Image (tube, rainbow over all chains, first blue to last red):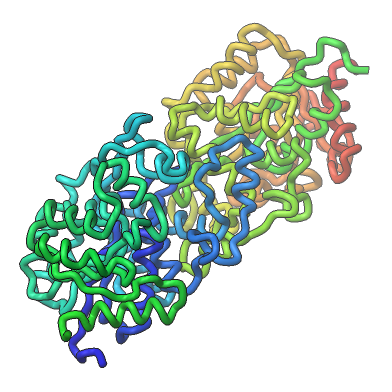
Length: 320
Length: 320
């Protein structure tokens, strides 16, 4: 049973995080989930403002995501891209016809002077999503990947170069001037959350940009709610995305312990519980030593039931 | 028989003009036709730079236009618009999925610093068009319609309001600072054309913006080639578009004579020959009195043969 006053803040990036958010969205009563989403991988492309992590979350919670493909919309058509290819235009970032509508909507509303938070809320509402979806900031923050091929804008690294370059670090352009989402900051200040979840998203390019917004991680540390981190690394591998490859290239051990060390050193005192997969149970002692309380559970989220079960498990950690 | 040195400059706006350009494009050897296209109805919409008259011409010459509909591409799909409608976005200007690619291509290239002339030339090349397609200017000129509903940007009047407002005049924002297409100006200065054709396009919102670019109409008047105007009004009606309605609202007689008077008063000495339809043959005397030499021919262009025949007729006027 969930406590009646359960109110969850989840921090998330792309696909892996969206899965846990879907579990939370299904589990919780309408409005009890607020999600703060990375926008460091937003970019301007073909004149459009594209927010890949927000869209992944929107499409996932709306039940419209293409799960086999791992991105974009189900039942999508590709006529605009086909025509753009004929014209010799830039097609490395695949924009489906219906997906394009999201970017056109967002771009038009931003051009009309609305901020990203408001436009995102409206998209969520139009898509019938009851949970609150919030960009981490309405000001632009742009992740740059430092690599053996030079500095690459995130989507160039991630999509165009398919994560092949070796990374040596990341920076988040504009972050010092970006205000963390004011609505979320206000909720934190009012201690409105019973739980803060850090989804199993990439620590370096999904969660770091959120936590490094001015004042945000200390506000999370100082709020009354426990902060629960779900490991993005299971048995030495990332379920999806380049987290494991990045850790290896950054010479961090590719283990849940390596993840724990990242959080413990960059955000001391932030994470209360670190939920690791059953297959990593032997790492619990090392993690406890880093000051995070390790907890063990099945963390794979292939089915909707597994997503809901993991969500339930996260929210029940403290009760144990 | 065409003279071997036939080199034609055509001034055009939207659909009607594009038909004659198609006739010319079919009739003339590759490269012998240069078209200068109105961009006064260009606009920025949903973050995209849209050039409706250029696109109508491109699609027409590429054999891809939707002739039944009168705009856009044949075999178009509308998935982006359907999705945008679901999101509550702005859908009054219908953008097909494949048409979107043209706008994305153009917008991206303009954002990268290329000018409209270069981007247009590249689109024409990609679409396999041998004739030269030139925007009247690479600088923005924006037609404003003065109406009983106030001042309306052209596409708001034309598409959104379906030409319903009563017009009282037009202005072309930015025209004083806009340079006429430099490549065309250079060709004119070198007397490279054997004929200048003014297509049967709307005098007020298609041709006036071109002719009122600084220095352009006097350069056309002063070049050696005869200037041949094809009447957009046939038997008191416009074949397509709001020209007749505008003339009535501006209290200009809705006849070929009314058109002749517009050109004679605004651009004295510009037009050498005014080609009117057979059905208007009785107006020839009035037109001659205005200083334009009236010529009579069948001007309807329903079939491709009729388009080519009218093109041939225009180019043979002087030989008679």
